[in-house]
Image (cartoon, rainbow, N blue to C red; front, side, top):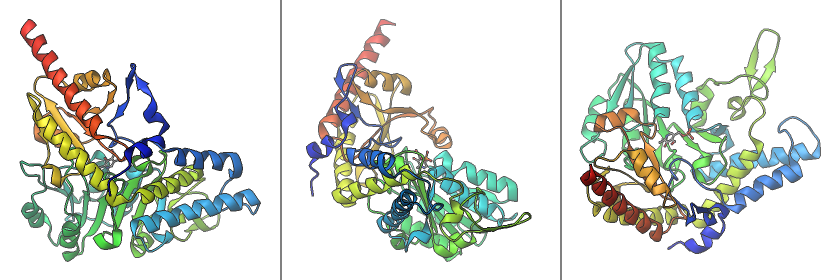
Length: 412
Ligand SMILES: Cc1ncc(COP(=O)(O)O)c(C=O)c1O
């Protein structure tokens, strides 16, 4: 179904604003997304009408806040295909979710064990594993990427062995846009009994993702990348896996019994939610899930595929512009590129002057940038509210950038 973008855009007040007198084209959705009125209102309603701490008091406000907080877990469980709220822990973000798993496995890994990652990981799915490897003596191994920015599946299969204890990888690359064959990778990991961790920061917001269909042990994603507020994220884990996982934070609400010398943990998922949680954030995330479900994840994915194909076609016509990553059909809704001889920050600044918000830099994937032999890229990333006209505007502005740069070079 084609999206009614005009109607969708009416839900996002920020999209009406002008930047330097020009209409805003917000193409930085891989970094964070804008929020619809429905999310903003749900959060205001929480603060105006039933703000209270959860899981503690018996008073009416606390009951209402607790109900909304628990319902948000339920909603996310249903959205991702999890069995129930036992499998859905709220964290701060994707980064914290992955840290919980890596930290817990630090207590179980040993010298000789191997952790398999890919060369296209975000720092959030590299650094926690480096720390785990340093603490335990386990070795990090990397699945390589091909010239077209896809995973070399043959090489990946070849490094998965009996020594592999963890396979952690991104579902969609935040730089190359590549959609990785998650099911196939998870199946390969399962054959050797390895634990699988899916970084779904760039997939859950943009396409249908079902944990049971994929079969992953853990999955991490962030609310702020899917129309929800920042400061709340999700760690999905199979119930038996989460039972075996140690919490990262200790304190109130995550306990069952505490004595002066010892403590035992609360049931799932609360043992991972120490201290007062982000109640308004949970309410906002639930409203974001409602919004996405109403539009339909398949429809959102199709819309982004259309925008990406258009962007790749138009950008390929811009002089001196190199696009990184695979063909449009194999990627999510983002395109990273460079213009020869122009620094990514200059490209971003020149686009910003036209009201086009993109991101320049290494996108928290420094090892990948080094591998590609570049300092960074400029990245345009799309979402359900972006229009084909915004893509055209981007291409036209980039034409202007190359023209400007050519003139500047001739003058030199
Ligand atoms: C693929 C990927 N993984 C992890 C993250 C980290 O997300 P957060 O900063 O919300 O923890 C990002 C954020 O850009 C990402 O793109």
